[in-house]
Length: 336
Image (cartoon, rainbow, N blue to C red; front, side):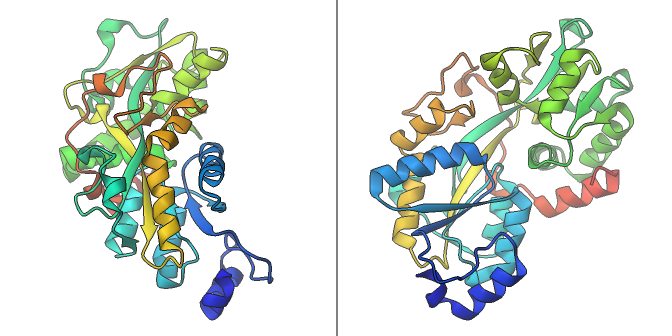
């Protein structure tokens, strides 16, 4: 039982952090997963993993930076065995604290090198593409920008919307920072501040564009495709514009998975991440409501979503996306 192995630290953390379970004497699950990916998606994956292995999983859900910072605070006393994120900057934050164990080669070999860091401390297991969604009555095809950087130009004043407080947009900013540098990112954010309208959540951005409240917005691809699969109610008056040729607007953000070095169940934790990237685990993701890209080449997402292989993302090292500098620049711009 986990509480008996790290009694003092675990009790202190349980009192200090609401996300942590109290040590009330009940038997805890075999694995504790700090999950910042979509709860519904990972819940399905975890249940299939339990059916496959008999290993129980408890999800403790939160946001990328919330859980990343929690792990950094907890250090070796963390009850977590596995950390999952929506986007990779939070993985880098935890990796830089030295908290990840190296993943098994049988896990790493299943994911192409561009979707995992060279040090093998974590791996991508799903991906999402940056897109511009536009109202087809308000934006003509010949007006579509060639670069996401163009959205900071005067011609897009009062015509663009986005949701800057979520991990999704912050990951996009991290790609702009990685490809364009600090000064250009600062100028781009200032231009967006002048031109744009802020909404709370990517679905709200999609709805605002579809209704004509705003001509265009920046989101990830699956929000639009998911609405198309469900009813089209919030997307039928819009289309997606994929940026090309390695533009930062073509950024593909990676959802990451890593095993904590402090795990008491490291062997089972390694099994969980291996299952996540295996053909079986990836097929669970492909068959789910999520419509995020799978990264194991043996499993295609399909579902009438533009294939991952057709995208032309910038050459960005997923291990070098910086959360602290992104946060600093977005605070400077007044978005956080």
